[in-house]
Image (cartoon, rainbow, N blue to C red; front, side):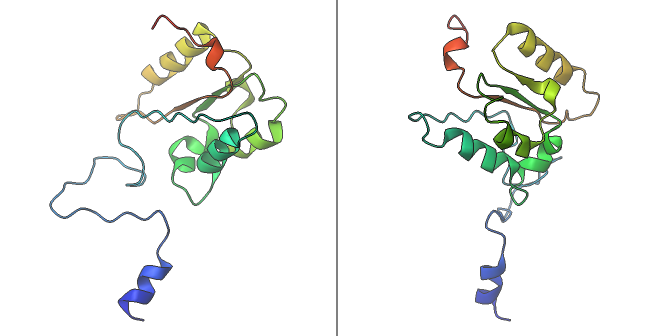
Amino acid sequence: MDIEDQDEERHPYSIDKIPGTKPAMLRYNDAIPGSVHTVLSVGFSRSGKTTAAVQMYSNKKFPFRAQFGNGERIWLISPTHHLQQDVWDRMNIPLDHRFKHYDEDVMKNFIQEAENDSNRPRLPRLMMLDDCVAELPTKR
């Protein structure tokens, strides 16, 4: 098998180490950002924003699924999640991590649980806000 054939069989998300760089202390996959990140998806109703997010974070071949404990460390705030339950169930988000409305107490609990994580570095968590931009605070 020559080199060209090997490249065709590589995983589509595989990343090569850049020569001369040091590897991170803990990385599930080099394709995953090493720090806090925000993804904003804007589009018309029924344009596929939710479907794209669910596909990205639930696909077994994409590295995000394992990074967030296969759903255990994901929180969802969405006023429509109960109407799209079959879609959101693909992510294995625990029912007690699903909320219909944005609430400061939900955010405080999310932050407190992360701060109480005894792992070093702390395990990554994901807060997904879907169809609730109008409920978010505007002062900060």
